[in-house]
Image (cartoon, rainbow, N blue to C red; front, side):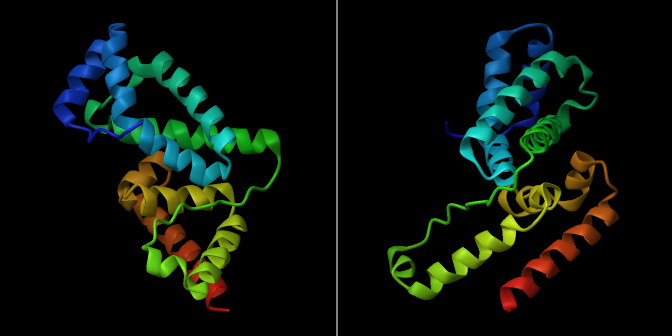
Length: 179
Protein backbone atom coordinates (compact mmCIF):
# COMPACT_ATOMS: atom_id res chain seq x y z
CA UNK A 1 0.00 0.00 0.00
CA UNK A 2 1.44 3.38 -0.91
CA UNK A 3 1.56 6.01 1.77
CA UNK A 4 -0.35 9.21 1.17
CA UNK A 5 1.29 12.32 2.57
CA UNK A 6 -0.81 13.33 5.58
CA UNK A 7 -2.46 16.70 5.04
CA UNK A 8 -3.53 18.30 8.34
CA UNK A 9 -6.79 19.74 7.00
CA UNK A 10 -7.78 16.53 5.23
CA UNK A 11 -6.86 14.52 8.33
CA UNK A 12 -8.97 16.80 10.55
CA UNK A 13 -12.07 16.49 8.39
CA UNK A 14 -11.49 12.75 7.93
CA UNK A 15 -11.02 12.40 11.66
CA UNK A 16 -14.26 14.21 12.42
CA UNK A 17 -16.15 12.11 9.88
CA UNK A 18 -14.55 8.86 11.10
CA UNK A 19 -15.43 9.68 14.71
CA UNK A 20 -19.02 10.05 13.51
CA UNK A 21 -18.80 6.53 12.05
CA UNK A 22 -17.88 7.25 8.42
CA UNK A 23 -15.96 4.16 7.29
CA UNK A 24 -14.73 5.82 4.07
CA UNK A 25 -13.13 8.64 6.09
CA UNK A 26 -11.49 6.03 8.33
CA UNK A 27 -10.24 4.21 5.22
CA UNK A 28 -8.60 7.47 4.10
CA UNK A 29 -6.85 7.72 7.48
CA UNK A 30 -5.67 4.13 7.07
CA UNK A 31 -4.39 4.87 3.55
CA UNK A 32 -2.51 7.92 4.79
CA UNK A 33 -0.83 6.29 7.79
CA UNK A 34 -0.69 2.51 7.33
CA UNK A 35 2.72 2.34 5.63
CA UNK A 36 4.44 4.40 8.33
CA UNK A 37 2.82 2.35 11.07
CA UNK A 38 3.89 -0.84 9.27
CA UNK A 39 7.52 0.33 9.10
CA UNK A 40 7.71 1.15 12.79
CA UNK A 41 5.92 -2.07 13.82
CA UNK A 42 8.30 -4.11 11.66
CA UNK A 43 11.36 -2.33 13.02
CA UNK A 44 10.27 -3.16 16.56
CA UNK A 45 9.03 -6.70 15.98
CA UNK A 46 11.64 -7.74 13.43
CA UNK A 47 9.16 -10.14 11.87
CA UNK A 48 6.64 -9.39 9.15
CA UNK A 49 3.90 -11.63 10.62
CA UNK A 50 4.28 -10.11 14.09
CA UNK A 51 4.22 -6.61 12.61
CA UNK A 52 1.02 -7.43 10.69
CA UNK A 53 -0.56 -8.75 13.90
CA UNK A 54 0.45 -5.55 15.68
CA UNK A 55 -1.04 -3.43 12.90
CA UNK A 56 -4.30 -5.33 12.92
CA UNK A 57 -4.62 -4.75 16.66
CA UNK A 58 -3.52 -1.11 16.30
CA UNK A 59 -6.21 -0.31 13.73
CA UNK A 60 -8.92 -1.95 15.86
CA UNK A 61 -7.81 0.15 18.84
CA UNK A 62 -7.63 3.28 16.67
CA UNK A 63 -11.18 2.76 15.41
CA UNK A 64 -12.49 2.14 18.91
CA UNK A 65 -10.70 5.10 20.53
CA UNK A 66 -10.86 7.60 17.67
CA UNK A 67 -13.15 9.86 19.67
CA UNK A 68 -10.47 10.31 22.34
CA UNK A 69 -8.08 12.19 20.02
CA UNK A 70 -7.72 15.64 21.57
CA UNK A 71 -5.65 17.33 18.88
CA UNK A 72 -6.57 16.32 15.31
CA UNK A 73 -3.25 17.77 14.10
CA UNK A 74 -1.45 15.07 16.10
CA UNK A 75 -3.30 12.10 14.57
CA UNK A 76 -0.10 10.76 12.98
CA UNK A 77 1.77 10.70 16.29
CA UNK A 78 -1.27 9.20 18.03
CA UNK A 79 -1.53 6.39 15.47
CA UNK A 80 2.23 5.72 15.59
CA UNK A 81 2.12 5.44 19.38
CA UNK A 82 -0.61 2.81 19.08
CA UNK A 83 1.50 0.87 16.55
CA UNK A 84 4.59 1.11 18.78
CA UNK A 85 2.68 -0.08 21.83
CA UNK A 86 1.03 -2.98 20.01
CA UNK A 87 4.34 -4.16 18.51
CA UNK A 88 5.94 -4.10 21.96
CA UNK A 89 2.96 -5.96 23.45
CA UNK A 90 3.21 -8.69 20.84
CA UNK A 91 6.92 -9.11 21.58
CA UNK A 92 6.22 -9.33 25.29
CA UNK A 93 3.59 -11.98 24.70
CA UNK A 94 5.90 -13.98 22.43
CA UNK A 95 8.83 -13.53 24.83
CA UNK A 96 11.44 -14.00 22.18
CA UNK A 97 14.15 -11.82 20.77
CA UNK A 98 13.91 -10.93 17.11
CA UNK A 99 16.58 -9.66 14.77
CA UNK A 100 15.54 -6.60 12.84
CA UNK A 101 16.12 -6.92 9.12
CA UNK A 102 16.31 -3.58 7.37
CA UNK A 103 15.60 -3.31 3.67
CA UNK A 104 18.42 -1.09 2.56
CA UNK A 105 17.80 -0.23 -1.08
CA UNK A 106 21.35 0.12 -2.29
CA UNK A 107 22.62 0.82 -5.79
CA UNK A 108 23.78 -2.30 -7.66
CA UNK A 109 27.45 -1.25 -7.36
CA UNK A 110 27.22 -1.22 -3.56
CA UNK A 111 25.45 -4.60 -3.39
CA UNK A 112 28.42 -6.33 -5.00
CA UNK A 113 30.91 -4.86 -2.51
CA UNK A 114 31.43 -7.46 0.25
CA UNK A 115 32.33 -4.72 2.74
CA UNK A 116 28.83 -3.25 2.39
CA UNK A 117 27.30 -6.66 3.09
CA UNK A 118 29.44 -7.14 6.17
CA UNK A 119 28.47 -3.71 7.46
CA UNK A 120 24.81 -4.53 6.94
CA UNK A 121 25.12 -7.82 8.85
CA UNK A 122 26.88 -6.00 11.68
CA UNK A 123 24.13 -3.37 11.78
CA UNK A 124 21.37 -6.00 11.81
CA UNK A 125 23.09 -7.87 14.65
CA UNK A 126 23.65 -4.68 16.63
CA UNK A 127 20.00 -3.67 16.21
CA UNK A 128 18.94 -7.16 17.23
CA UNK A 129 20.74 -6.76 20.54
CA UNK A 130 18.76 -3.60 21.35
CA UNK A 131 15.59 -3.77 23.41
CA UNK A 132 12.25 -3.32 21.63
CA UNK A 133 11.97 0.13 23.22
CA UNK A 134 15.35 1.18 21.85
CA UNK A 135 14.51 -0.20 18.39
CA UNK A 136 11.28 1.83 18.57
CA UNK A 137 13.29 5.01 19.22
CA UNK A 138 15.62 4.28 16.30
CA UNK A 139 12.68 3.49 13.99
CA UNK A 140 10.68 6.56 14.97
CA UNK A 141 13.68 8.84 14.48
CA UNK A 142 15.55 7.39 11.52
CA UNK A 143 12.88 5.44 9.63
CA UNK A 144 9.86 7.73 10.10
CA UNK A 145 11.70 11.01 10.70
CA UNK A 146 9.94 12.10 13.90
CA UNK A 147 11.73 14.75 15.95
CA UNK A 148 12.49 14.15 19.61
CA UNK A 149 9.48 16.13 20.83
CA UNK A 150 7.16 13.94 18.77
CA UNK A 151 8.95 10.76 19.84
CA UNK A 152 8.71 11.87 23.45
CA UNK A 153 5.00 12.37 23.11
CA UNK A 154 4.59 8.94 21.47
CA UNK A 155 6.69 7.14 24.09
CA UNK A 156 5.57 9.15 27.13
CA UNK A 157 8.92 10.84 27.74
CA UNK A 158 10.05 14.44 27.72
CA UNK A 159 11.81 15.74 24.60
CA UNK A 160 15.07 16.11 26.54
CA UNK A 161 14.74 12.63 28.00
CA UNK A 162 14.14 11.29 24.51
CA UNK A 163 17.20 13.12 23.15
CA UNK A 164 19.33 11.70 25.95
CA UNK A 165 18.11 8.13 25.47
CA UNK A 166 18.41 8.35 21.68
CA UNK A 167 21.93 9.72 22.06
CA UNK A 168 22.89 6.83 24.33
CA UNK A 169 21.38 4.24 22.00
CA UNK A 170 23.11 5.66 18.92
CA UNK A 171 26.40 5.94 20.83
CA UNK A 172 26.05 2.29 21.85
CA UNK A 173 25.40 1.32 18.22
CA UNK A 174 28.39 3.36 17.01
CA UNK A 175 30.64 1.79 19.63
CA UNK A 176 29.46 -1.70 18.78
CA UNK A 177 29.83 -1.13 15.04
CA UNK A 178 33.25 0.43 15.52
CA UNK A 179 34.64 -2.74 17.11
